[in-house]
Image (cartoon, rainbow over all chains, first blue to last red):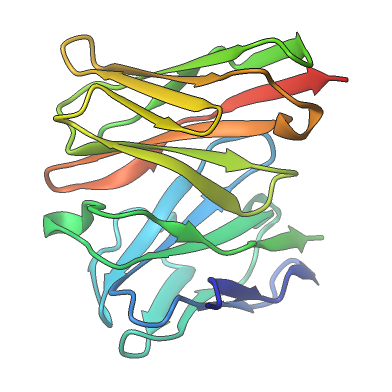
Length: 119
Length: 110
């Protein structure tokens, strides 16, 4: 079946512009996670969804970042007034099951990521 | 939140040799997963090992888990050039979001 897809694959934007990144999880997956990965670094957790609610937004780095999810389907990560430090690869993952507090009880399947470059 | 930290940060070996990477974490976990990442893009799941398991195998991969030492190791036997990638461990347990370390960058020379 289809895996996790993300769009766009690459996005170049000017400082101060808003961007929207999209994630289509695997059908039926309850949990959806967003991560950020700066060059040569590990994955930085941003937010996770259980269904369409986001119990934990603690990883969002500032109020310029927001995310929403429609049911157990598509999620959009929005970055307003982008800054150069926002440049990174944004990765989305989904999993079939999620435990209390977002603990992963099952394999996370990752999308290919969106490479964001803020000039 | 708990965090897995991989060691070494970088590993360079010849094709045919074995590669061993380690992951240490700080608090109790429900499971630990290993992922591979090629060229800084999407991660590919390799193995999930639960806290009540000590060893798992998948093809040329062998993962061990020592909960008393809060550590795990990933062994790739008979490495190939195609194994060149970054390898991450992700720990998950209790109410914690799965967290990833910085990864081990493996280079396998043909």
